[in-house]
Image 1: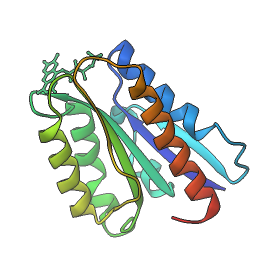
Image 2 (image 1 turned 120 degrees about the horizontal axis):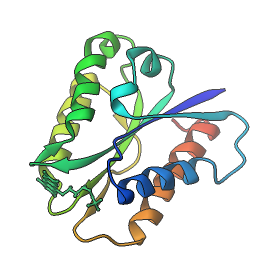
Image 3 (image 1 turned 90 degrees about the horizontal axis):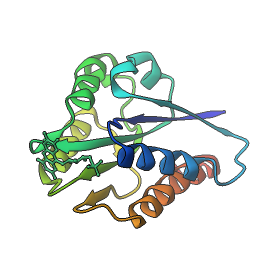
Length: 153
Ligand SMILES: Cc1cc2nc3c(=O)[nH]c(=O)nc-3n(C[C@H](O)[C@H](O)[C@H](O)COP(=O)(O)O)c2cc1C
């Protein structure tokens, strides 16, 4: 079995919907070799990352940066995971009411430092809420789960 880890900061109704859309995508196909673990960033530990085969991150943009919760996650897992998880397949989504640029850059920088491998384009849900954000997140979850199941990643 391969484990897909979802680390999602979901402080509002809309961001809960985005997280749930990712999970709906992961479970859309009956994939016997895949299971997932979904945690809020503040509850995730280095062991959760060490035991996963791919990771999807989700955050809001607040004050031009990722949520403090996701940054705290990176701060705690960085050195425990640095040597052992190089090449970890990852992607992410950002809910940004206005912009998303600062958060996107910061996640790219940190994940480059970790030497993780981005396997799907990020989803940036920018501006006023649109229901098609949910389709984008569902597709992201489905693509990563299927790719992992097929052994592409
Ligand atoms: C204190 C605060 C700071 C914010 N800063 C930004 C920001 O810098 N850039 C941005 O795109 N959105 C910003 N937003 C909007 C949030 O990204 C957005 O409200 C959040 O992702 C939740 O989405 P929702 O309102 O659709 O539930 C901010 C919101 C708050 C409350």
